[in-house]
Image (tube, rainbow, N blue to C red; front, side, top):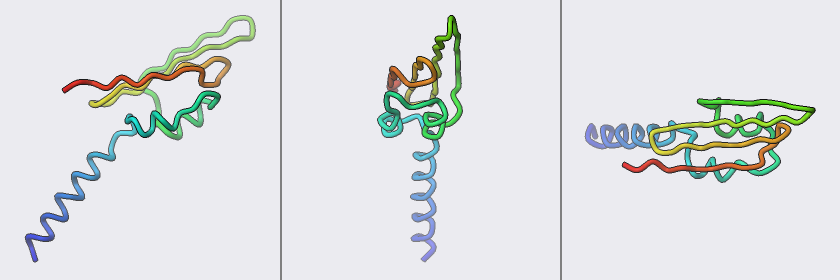
Length: 91
């Protein structure tokens, strides 16, 4: 009985560690053109890096999320997603 409990505990630990980062391909696929920053943050969490600027009523921004496995970058024009990129890190 103890052995089954230890195996179940180990399996749960592995599942939780795999779910820890929101920076993954599944969440990258959820980010769609036209989304606003709040919608993207709901999917990926707070960005690790963020830059923005505006001129003559137009604004642009970029945000980056990083994990050990991947980097996701999202570009915005007038606060809506216009481009995104997923870069997987090699082991």
